[in-house]
Amino acid sequence: MMMTPVKAMISDDHPMVTEGIQSILESYDDIRVVGCLSNTRAAINPFEALEPDVILMDLNMPKVGGLSATKIVLGQRYLCTDAKKSL
Image (cartoon, one colour):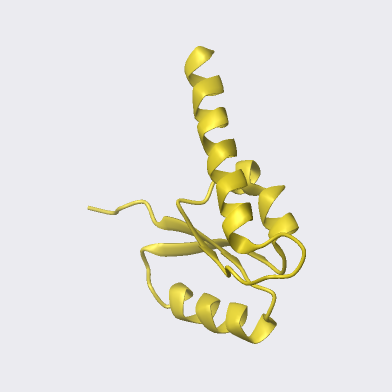
């Protein structure tokens, strides 16, 4: 039985790290990388459109830290889920 791949998004300000993680994840048939973003602001905006199941977020990034961005993204996820339930 074919399973739906896990959708992963990577957010890191170091391109070499992002490319390495992406390369490793894409070697698995059951994981699909849906986005690689270079800063936390970029990770917050497309979250709803990309709908990742997993976000690999660098916690130490300039401007908006990864922990703050994670809190924002989680808030968006719950707001989106609640909005969809009310439709």
